[in-house]
Length: 390
Image (cartoon, rainbow, N blue to C red; front, side):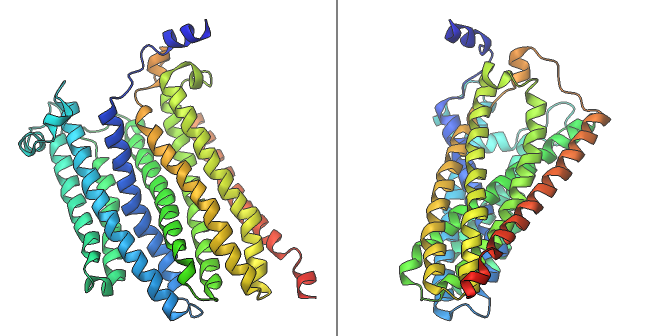
C-alpha cells in the first residue's frame, strides 16, 4: 500500500536515462580531478613541499607523483567533457539517440545554433566557449606527461587552476537576463556548490593518491604529511561551509517541505545525497577530533614513528572512505533532477527579507561552529602534552 502511494506521489519524477547519468557523473569526476587537484596543489601540496623541514628526495618524489596525477586528470577531463557535450546535444535534439549526438557535425551544429528568442547569447555559444576553455585546461595538464614539462609543474598547475575554474563558471552564465534577485542568486549558489564540492572531493582524491608513495618516503616524511593534512583540513572546512550554505539555498528552491524528501523522486535522491555528505562530514570530524590531535602531539613530542604511522597509514584509510563516499555522491547527482515542489504541486519558492536574515544568521552560526571545531581540535591536541613530555 505504501509502495503504491509512493509511486503515485513520485509519478511526476523523470528518471534520467543511463547515458545521461553516466555522462553527468563522469563530467563531475573530470571537474573534481582538474579543479580539486589544482586548488589542493596550490593551497596544500606546494606549501608543504616547500617547507624547510621537507626532505629534498621526498619533495621530488611527491612532485613527480603530483605531475602524473595532474596529467591524467587532464585526460579524464577531456574525455568526460566530450561525452558531456554530446549529452547536451542529445537532450537538445528532442529524442536524438545519444550515439548520434557523438557525431562531430551534430555537435558543431549545436554549438553554432542561433540564440533563442529573448536570449542575449546563444546557449551553444556559451558551451562553445566553455569547451574551448576545457580543451585548453586539459592540454595544459596533459603537457605534464612530457618529462621536460614536469620541471615546470608549479607553473603549469597554477596556470591550469583558473582555467579549470572557468570551465564550470562559464557554463553557469545565464543566456537570458535574470528577472529578479532569486534568478541572479541561483547560478551563484549553484556554482559555489559545484566549485566547493569539486575542491573537496578532488583534493581528497589527490592526497590519497600521493599517500600511496609512503613506502618510498623517508623516515621524516611524517612532518611533511602532518603539515599536508593540517593545511587541507582548513581547505576542507571552508568547502564544507560553502557546500552547506549553497546546498541549503538550492534545497529550499526545490523542496517545499521536509516530507517531500521521502514522498517525491527528487526528494529521495536528494535525501540519499544528504546522507552521503553527512558521512563525509562525519569522517572529517573524526579526522579533526581524533587523528589531528594525535598527529600534533606526536609532532610536538618528536615521536617520529607514531607521526609516520598516523599520517601515512591511519589518515589515508579514513580519506579512502571519504573518496568512496564522494564518488557515491557523484553517482547520485544525476538523479537529483526536476523539482520536488513541482512533483508535489507546491508553490514556487519566493525569497523575502526574513529568509535572507535567517540565512545570514545560519551562515554566521556555521562559521562560528567551524571556528569552534578548529579550536576544539587544537585543545584536544594540547591535552596530555605535559604527561608526554614528562
